[in-house]
Image (tube, rainbow, N blue to C red; front, side, top):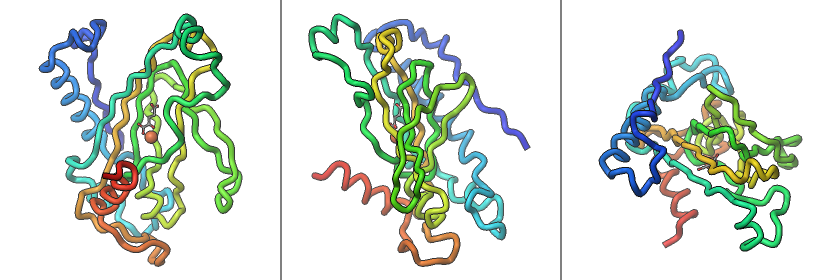
Length: 223
Ligand SMILES: O=C(O)CCC(=O)C(=O)O
Ligand SMILES: [Fe+2]
């Protein structure tokens, strides 16, 4: 079965203007269309990867009926001109960080990136010791990049490992002199969904989706 991926036509929103010159209403309409598109695409193609055969294929879909706790983040990484480099930085080191290494919290993340590059994912040689190295997640036109989140790792008792990723400043001056934009949609199961190991093991304590999200947010943003 194929499902059409909704298209948000940015032309309508005249994004050639500076963000402060686009009215709040237009920005709100655009955000609403993007969120709507993400929640329509929903939870794609996850059955059969670490998910027991006896699970109803709609099992995950049924745990994602309410997108109120899923989040959208629009990221704008400013251009770094040679002039700014001379003024502000002595030099830009290879792999200088723009967004530090982390894994996302939810079940999956759908990420749209432009063609500037810089996103890297950890390729783990050894899952136990977590030895590995960062490799580029090169942008491909017409594709959505998907991360496995920490909650899905817990759900599948580590059969699916949460993607460790980061964003670095591109090495080529022609790339870092461009603005980089990405849009991430963090898919979160329904708040009261009880996430317990699908293989029946007790590797992780059962926890509701909302409790897990709260725990992660609290650790990231302590009061
Ligand atoms: O900007 C990107 O490509 C990645 C952003 C990201 O990983 C995040 O917001 O969690
Ligand atoms: Fe992320």
